[in-house]
Length: 246
Ligand SMILES: [Zn+2]
Image (tube, rainbow, N blue to C red; front, side, top):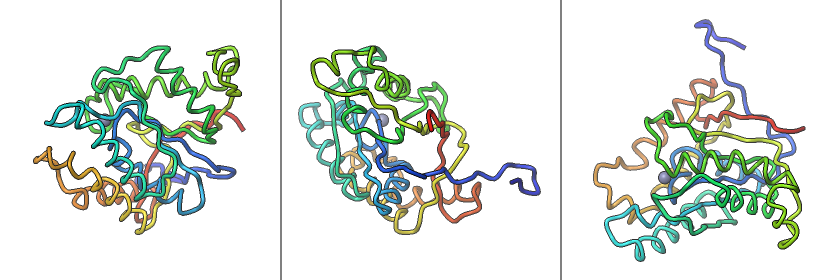
């Protein structure tokens, strides 16, 4: 389908058969800049969505890490609740110093085998993303999550996950990347937009440390409206979606 301008209109992501989706990010709040609207829509349809954070975001506030880590983890729990998240895992990689490598891939592959998602949502791993130069942790986690989707499906990669932890290989059918030009969209309703705003607002103490940060209600709906225009609907979240298997 194309519009009169010649620009391709984005088509809806095919959710056929999707029961579980795992969102893999580096920090508390990373999923709350648009993705959480899709999450709210998915959970309202009965899809089980889990969040995997590689760090507790302990280096992201004015207060010391030992205070910030638990506080941000609690704010993330509330943010997830706002969009229907029941499974939240926060691993202890060091905020600001996450390195791409086998330990990171193994940790993500382990959680993929545990949660058994039909789709994994993560960052592109690119240096340049839609909003500028991306953070080192985001790049490391995005790249490692992309690789871990494949690792999780191969019994000869990280064989100890099966031998020692009994975690059978698991192959997700879809990889949905954020931060790249979208090739498909998830249409979201007004309720999901409101819950997405609430999910970012849940990071209350964190946002209070960032006086320049706009209020969530002042820009999250705009992001979703903008993507909606590209799909011909009121609100949408865009992804660069890749089908990995049928
Ligand atoms: Zn982040």
